[in-house]
Length: 161
Length: 419
Ligand SMILES: Cc1cc2nc3c(=O)[nH]c(=O)nc-3n(C[C@H](O)[C@H](O)[C@H](O)COP(=O)(O)O)c2cc1C
Ligand code: SF4
Ligand code: FES
Image 1 (spheres, each protein chain N blue to C red):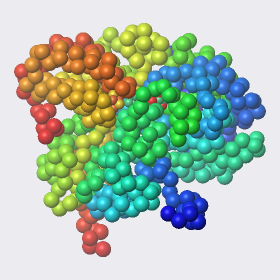
Image 2 (image 1 turned 30 degrees about the vertical axis):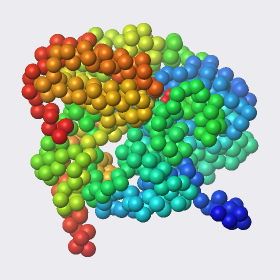
Image 3 (image 1 turned 135 degrees about the horizontal axis):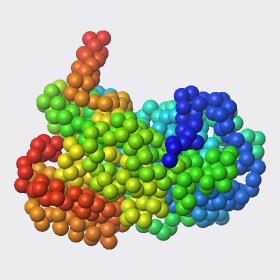
């Protein structure tokens, strides 16, 4: 690195503490697949001036980020105690029947990925899942059906547009 | 014991989320008073109030603040990672009373000499992240955050940091690593963060609820604070009621409220009471003997338990304790950071055995093996995560051994979720 430009770039370059935020941005930039692409990861490593392997090491630690393409809608179903005793297993079984996917799997059309996660911090409305950034509460089979159908509908509308 | 509305006084609709309304309700009186004191006096008042950390460990807040190394720049971090299953009080406060938290942070910062603070918030709260950012911006433009706070000459600003979905990161040493853009691995203490934290600078970490209590100490006085609830761990406390109660939610009571009273406040048990887990996933699981337990740090410790985060998960007789065992052990196995062998391997073994028990293929000797495994982990794990499994497991096995034994050899449907 040239000595003269250093002061400038030092100010412009994001600091290492920005790493997780950059991962979030990178993942959000792929709304159809919800993952951090290799290009984006390399870009982040360059911006932070760290080896690519180091960025890879950090991103792999955090469950929120994926390095492989996922569905357009990532369903994060809570299966911690409060949700479990109020029916998360029923919700899980319904999704499995309805979409044909189990935990960690993505539907063939790339629409849904199902993840089973731990407490989402809203046990007072258990059982819960999040779909991308939206929380759905007090779930049972019929509400799950409503949510899935609405998301399918939304996706179809966007394709038509 | 009656429920109280000190913290929740700021959480009612429209009060805590609007800076003007918040001030009309008495907000920022505490900060004003604190800024008129010397930092050392501010620390002394918190010590005098006997405030203990609400993040789980119950560490004396005044003591933490008084041990900060002073020969360097200091950072303040608000722990809003709230990953403990059954816990949603920090979310409640952040949603409804962001200025109470920011005011508490400003007082804490003044006390310990910090000019920069961070709120590390779990990424599962995306809406709160944007609302908090708005509150931070508003606080800045109102003069209660940023430069020359309330014209006192004191500068303090706050940045928001989203997490990445990891329970272990809630541990303070792991959280600091994560904040610096590293894997969220816990590290051995000492050095304590107050000595060597963010970028090796002294750093104070407090839980959201702890910081929310701080303004009250200055607006109402330390004697007032100390007069509420249990003598050895006083003050208001937010309890999180969930599971089989009629009206789950956050309930504010004086420290030391009985489990029975809390359940009544939450509308009573939906069905017949069977079990309760207190303090989070690593907390003890009790039968009805727990109904008389007083929920404060000292009382819970005296019965061999722990108050933890204040989570209270109520279970009725429909709940299968084999499933509870499985859910808890799977949590530990999934969330172990994998850094130390005992915890990485032990949690896998525990999950495996619990799964076999829950699905009816378990063997009698698993019950003893699980205890041994947890005990080894207690002695050889690096951080409290691996050490803490012992309590949940032994209470579960002690209090529900007949049922768990009877479970052995009975096929169940639980395997489905494991697939
Ligand atoms: C595995 C683990 C997870 C933790 N999770 C949290 C958490 O989500 N929120 C929190 O405030 N403290 C959590 N803690 C406790 C913190 O390490 C720390 O004690 C606390 O933030 C200090 O704040 P306080 O003194 O105000 O309680 C956790 C500890 C461990 C070991
Ligand atoms: S005890 Fe477990 S969670 Fe804690 S550092 Fe070791 S492996 Fe990680
Ligand atoms: S247990 Fe599901 S949100 Fe807490």
